[in-house]
Length: 319
Image (cartoon, rainbow, N blue to C red; front, side, top):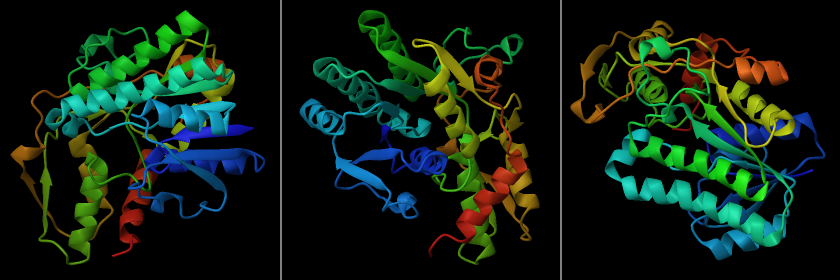
């Protein structure tokens, strides 16, 4: 099977490529990259994946890539995925995330490609969630609270529109927070882990800078998330949307406390105003029963293990 992963050089994309290769060595994995893409996440499998240069914002580049790969499956993960950056660059976030997807879908239409596509949405689409609406089901209203969240709603709705308009086999997933080895240090739990490791190594003063510690998030291990993506693309009805989550919520302070409990250093906590957002989602707690009923999927890796693996990733990161 010919499988295309956009965003393969990223955190989730690299884990997905590893999983698909482990699942079936006969899978042909294609990934896209730009000349400035960092590829260290693929070091373990670089000889087993086929990389194709492509700029998702260039419709001609996308059409050429799609004509070359002719995929049976597409996992569309590429996106500007950092919420805080979307406040500083809202237009770039909207353009990257929506136009890139439009170019993929238009290339499918022009080339008459019959392939299954998973569109990676986000729990941020739900945005302002009322306590009585938790755990959040796929039918919950979408009230996005950041430019990033708006861009993911746009991707989500575009997938639905192309399914209804052209009959494309498009599956929408809304993954809640996920973490594990290779998580970028701009994301809260990984940033905490890296700060702690820098202190352990004597590279930083014993102070961890934090933002809003009261927000609560539903975390799943990335290695469980990529299994869910694969199960969804193989089993879900086109046009449907599925939450991927753990049905458990942790406050950001609880996450920090777990990380600190796995380190020997004494650390002071300080609030950094630059880490606070103009508006923040206070509670994201998901319900994965729809995907579970379809495929039997459920998260298997305990969150404490995820955080320990994340700390060890930074402890072993090349200095």
